[in-house]
Length: 68
Image (cartoon, rainbow, N blue to C red; front, side, top):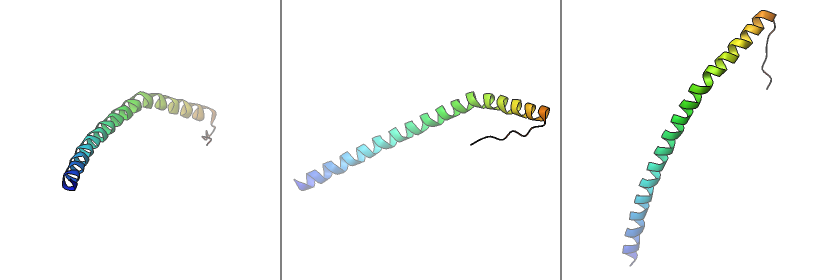
C-alpha cells in the first residue's frame, strides 16, 4: 500500500508541477504583453509632457524640479 501511495503522490506531484509551470508561463507572457501595451500608450503622453515642461522652462528661464 505504501509503495502505491508513494507512486500516486509522485505522479500527482509531477502532474501538478507541470500544470503550475504552464500557468506561470502563461501569466508571465500575459504580463509582458500588458506591460508593453501600457508602455506604448503612456510613453507618447509622457514625452509630450516632458517637451511642454522643457519649453516652459526654456521660455521662462526657470528650472523645474520634480517634487518627490
